[in-house]
Length: 318
Image (cartoon, rainbow, N blue to C red):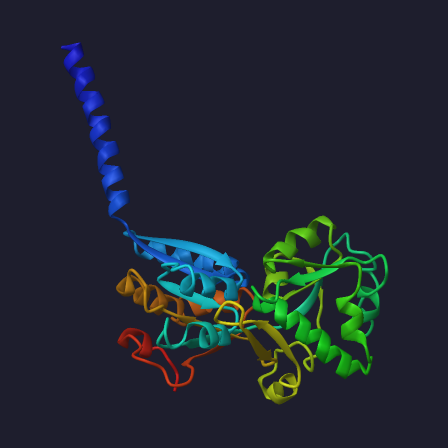
């Protein structure tokens, strides 16, 4: 009798485990590639979306937007939704072959981030940051321009600063500074500044806010924030790796605007559309972005868009 009870108990446990495994394997998986600067808001969006949709498992991969776009095109990376820190990454690297449309949804600004252990942190300000950053004993950095929009935007900020402050040769001096370091992702700079291994880093304002780090608020003439200054920003440019290996492309300065799309090769387009609908919902994802320091843009389609899923199109502004 005891043997039968033990056998029944064991059998019950096995059945529960098998049932859980079956439910887990049956969960719908939606894969998202997103800019590193969106890590905090996307983590919250993932949590909220999965709570509202118990049968869905959102799988996120963060990184430099340009690098992720090339993963989609060159390496056949099968993501369902792609969110870029620069909408032009979608335009230049994905459309028209790998994506039909591009929706603009958020903005940001470049700041000079620093931490409690940063040298001269008690004296750096909007007027003297270039002089402080380029002192011989200061370590500063930015992300890799070919991989991450924050990287090439950092170089644009320095070019604009040279013009704005009237400091001829500032950009060349910064590029040759011995304390300059370049990292693959902008988000990697956060830990370095927090630990004191780097004194200053160019980063998005939202990221500095989310991590509780100090920052120098740069003038709008150079922080790439103001849509009204688009022509002034366009006076500077950076040469980057192009769509094809060995090719180059020139990216001009312009206001920071994030874009998203569903790649043409998305494995689960229905699941992708449902998630994007939540991301663009004013009470859903857009509210999360605003809560975490990013202003909402639109949302609106950019350029001549291909067929946008009806449920997404209904959320867009004309």
